[in-house]
View (cartoon, rainbow, N blue to C red):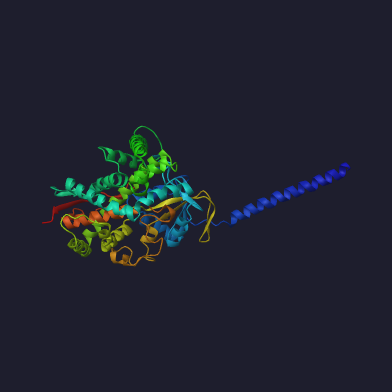
Amino acid sequence: MDKELVHVLLGLFSTLASTTVFVICLKLSNDRNKKKLPPGNMGFPWIGETLEFYKAQKGNRLFEEFIQPRIRKYGKVFKTHLMGSPTVIVSGANANRFILSNEFKMVVSSWPASSVQLMGKNSIMEKQGESHRCLRGLISATFGDVGLETLVPKVFNSILSHLGQKWNDREEISLYRSTKAMTFTIVLECLLGINVKAGMLETFEKILEGVFAPAIRFPGSKFSRATKARLEIHRMIVEVVREERQQMEACGRLQEREGGMLLSRLVAGLIWGEISEEEVVDNIVLLVFAAHDTTSFAIAMTFKMLSQHPNCHALLLQEHVDLMRDKRPGEILTLDDVKKMKYTWQVTRESMRLFPPIFGSFRKAIVDIEFEGFTIPKGWKVLWTTYGTHYSADYFQDPLSFNPSRFEEPFPPYVFLPFGGGPRVCAGYQLAKLTTLIFVHLVVTRYDWSLLYPDEKITMDPLPFPSHGMPIKISPKM
């Protein structure tokens, strides 16, 4: 082959290669141009609109001051930039269903680095796919009919003991702080079978203070203090877990996995090699946080609404008076009794609709997502919020009014989400329900009560709470 032909062939190959590269680049460019990002404002470099978000959240006005104005301007799907990440905020039942039901397929749970380190990278909130299903199965099994039948008398007696020790001979009590201590004890002792020791609640509270703080360890910072408290709790729980394992292996109590305390179930999973010791510890820590703070807030908001709506309080009280007629003096409640508290549960749900214990949660897109004509790029955060449906007239008539009777009929899926939804719906919501209903029963049938500040403001740091701790006046019923 002569040199001239070689040069011609090389020239043709070079032209073909260049053309191919050009076509590929043009296609990629066209593909990018076809991606229509949601409308919105990304705010300042890096910080985006984080300051506006935090300001609205701290005053418990995230929907009114941050989300609703942007929905009016951009629609129910809009982009922003929060905490260092480009974020798409979505609203409405269809959006909730799409995002929450596609967990593990299109999105995964996304928490701040501080939350992951303090709750534990081996907790269920960080697990994906099969490992998530395994852990969730162990936890959820506790709340079957047999488990709930076992839990009701334990929760009843725990609340009765708390009221006797903390409420009797008192004329004023902080309802929120009192129920925080009570729900903390219920989670540890009734659900997990771990005795509460002096200082444990205070140590857990120190961890919570750093959950959403910047993950920077310098002396005196919230995250530094929280990390130190987390190590203390870790040592304490490891000791409990290892002691439980020794006892179960020594006497062959692996059958406790089917009907015992949640701690026994988790340790049985450890013995069978299904989960690790770190997974047991991290999930105990997560369960304590997930259960006691949100439940105490739900209880506080239920009493806030009852105080402001005497007619609802009268109907609720009558339900419990009727229930007591069928009970002997001193007889404890059963699961069937709790199931009869239909109006009380309507009141509680309506209170949680107006004051959701969680504002929503973040997900991260693991693929490019096409939704409502827009593209949510891979790697972007997605935020769904309870307010997007709870406060919407599309789902609730006169949404800002308190109307428990609206819960006489069920709502469509992904409309009412105080416990989240999809594969990550709160595994312990049944315990929250039991605790709230039994507590309301014992208080309204045994005490006259009134709020000192009926219009007390709600703030968030990082979870919502009544700014004064919701002090109430109490006196035993005659």
